[in-house]
Length: 247
Ligand code: MG
Ligand code: MG
Image (tube, rainbow, N blue to C red; front, side, top):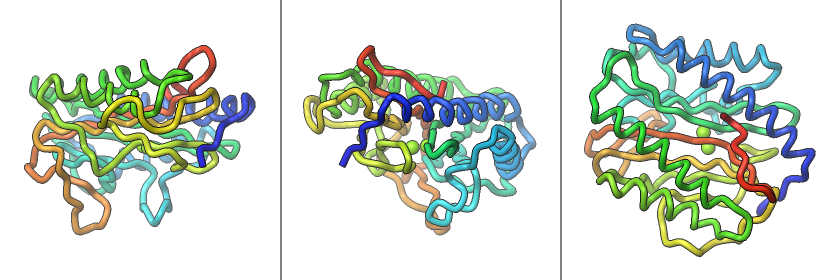
């Protein structure tokens, strides 16, 4: 069942979303060669707690950290560790925060120092594909109008959309119905109505769409070793159009 949020609930979700966006902005500023992903996680947790919120991810199905930190060919669910970031890496940081009974969820892929043009292009296309999807997140459209717009945009550049993971409804639970795929034919799925809140999150690979899961049981990597990027925001569908809660 898709849970439709009342105005007051959307208002609470703005607060959770603000915590997430503040945290991601701060993290993007501190990412640099020589730091570990565990350090980044500590900083994130600190910033989330200081805002009176709780990291959504920590303990979620046993996940051990406050952010997911996925480097280069890692697609999502990278576990922060002693891994040292190197000049030229790209890192996808996924962050969730719980405040006043509601979750916010967003992700950015960030260059570490100077990176290749290929890496920058992937980051840019992934980000823009989200905005192409959001244009379709309007009352009266169908869910997969969003999915289709993302896929069409990404594939224009010869990149591929990951199928294994999808976006989701969000609210009192971090993952609610419906699933929000980043691919597929338009005009399917539920009709979009005011009060739906969706985490729209394209994951895009430079190579094949296929991923495998590492032995830690969490981290998804591209099977061909190609670079992957992730861009996500929590979006409220309202009568006057979509409102992005995590920017
Ligand atoms: Mg996320
Ligand atoms: Mg999400």
